[in-house]
Image (tube, rainbow, N blue to C red):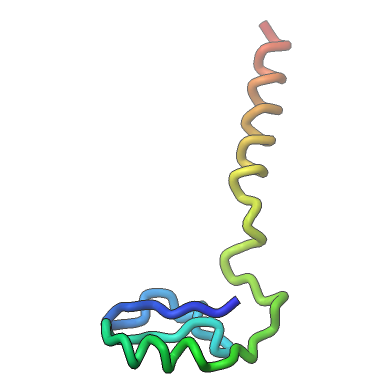
Length: 72
Protein backbone atom coordinates (compact mmCIF):
# COMPACT_ATOMS: atom_id res chain seq x y z
CA UNK A 1 0.00 0.00 0.00
CA UNK A 2 1.30 3.41 -0.93
CA UNK A 3 0.83 6.64 0.95
CA UNK A 4 1.52 10.33 0.66
CA UNK A 5 2.70 12.26 3.69
CA UNK A 6 1.89 15.97 3.69
CA UNK A 7 4.80 17.39 5.65
CA UNK A 8 7.90 19.52 5.22
CA UNK A 9 10.40 16.80 6.13
CA UNK A 10 10.66 13.04 6.40
CA UNK A 11 9.99 12.02 9.99
CA UNK A 12 10.15 8.28 9.30
CA UNK A 13 12.57 7.58 6.45
CA UNK A 14 11.78 3.86 6.70
CA UNK A 15 8.40 4.58 5.11
CA UNK A 16 10.05 5.99 2.00
CA UNK A 17 11.68 2.69 0.97
CA UNK A 18 10.59 1.42 -2.43
CA UNK A 19 8.31 4.41 -3.04
CA UNK A 20 5.91 3.05 -0.44
CA UNK A 21 5.46 6.61 0.82
CA UNK A 22 5.88 9.94 -0.91
CA UNK A 23 6.57 13.32 0.67
CA UNK A 24 4.45 16.19 -0.62
CA UNK A 25 3.71 19.82 0.01
CA UNK A 26 0.05 20.64 0.71
CA UNK A 27 -0.63 21.17 -2.97
CA UNK A 28 -3.44 19.32 -4.75
CA UNK A 29 -1.55 18.71 -8.01
CA UNK A 30 1.60 17.55 -6.22
CA UNK A 31 -0.38 15.15 -4.02
CA UNK A 32 -2.15 13.68 -7.05
CA UNK A 33 1.11 13.28 -8.94
CA UNK A 34 2.70 11.53 -5.95
CA UNK A 35 -0.27 9.16 -5.71
CA UNK A 36 0.36 8.14 -9.32
CA UNK A 37 3.86 6.85 -8.47
CA UNK A 38 3.74 3.07 -8.22
CA UNK A 39 5.38 1.48 -5.20
CA UNK A 40 8.30 -0.82 -5.92
CA UNK A 41 8.88 -2.01 -2.39
CA UNK A 42 8.94 -5.49 -1.00
CA UNK A 43 5.59 -6.09 0.71
CA UNK A 44 7.34 -8.14 3.38
CA UNK A 45 9.32 -5.04 4.47
CA UNK A 46 7.72 -4.07 7.79
CA UNK A 47 10.09 -1.75 9.66
CA UNK A 48 7.53 -1.08 12.40
CA UNK A 49 6.36 -4.65 12.98
CA UNK A 50 3.52 -6.78 11.70
CA UNK A 51 0.59 -4.66 12.90
CA UNK A 52 -0.29 -6.97 15.77
CA UNK A 53 1.53 -5.24 18.64
CA UNK A 54 -1.65 -4.47 20.62
CA UNK A 55 -2.79 -8.10 20.44
CA UNK A 56 0.61 -9.30 21.67
CA UNK A 57 0.62 -6.78 24.54
CA UNK A 58 -2.88 -7.80 25.64
CA UNK A 59 -1.93 -11.48 25.52
CA UNK A 60 1.17 -10.92 27.65
CA UNK A 61 -0.73 -8.72 30.13
CA UNK A 62 -3.56 -11.27 30.43
CA UNK A 63 -1.08 -14.09 31.00
CA UNK A 64 0.74 -12.02 33.65
CA UNK A 65 -2.49 -11.13 35.45
CA UNK A 66 -3.66 -14.73 35.30
CA UNK A 67 -0.41 -15.99 36.81
CA UNK A 68 -0.45 -13.25 39.44
CA UNK A 69 -4.02 -14.20 40.42
CA UNK A 70 -3.00 -17.85 40.83
CA UNK A 71 -0.30 -16.90 43.35
CA UNK A 72 -2.72 -15.36 45.82
